[in-house]
Length: 237
Image (cartoon, rainbow, N blue to C red; front, side, top):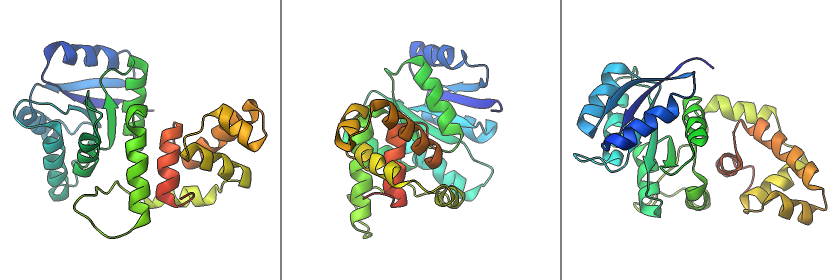
């Protein structure tokens, strides 16, 4: 993986220092800028054009959701702005989560996450895949299911981005086996490996093998992403 240029937008000094320290443990990640408010952060995103920005949801001048929305508007006017946006917050309420994705966030991560997982979140976001914190996975899965039930636009619903055409083509090329589809359906239902093994009369080791195959074919890093992608692609319902 090439160098990942990151901007950190966070108003609390100690938290910003901690984020910088955590991310700089990974040689591939380079912090190219920091901002303590949304106004300065937006200017940094335009000037530095980083690969990824971590954005605190509770910034003092405007919240991270509004910053995300404004940056996405700038992207529509200038294709050179390609930064992926990772929301960092202590809020796991349904309203905050859906508002963030509705504004155009690529990923959503809780601040109490372990350092290694934060690095994984940044790397995954950089590759173009959403990183969804397990703490808010159920909210996202419910939303995707709701979107799949009806194509009508509602002011109370927030659309989560569909599949990139190239990614969709890749998934079609690497079709899941019948057994992998059965395992995936149980992942979407919230079952862990032991529960899947029990339901399908398999060993846990065999289930793990199927899960690895599913993650590879769907081009995702974890089970939550697999569930969201499967629902979005219509592989399961």
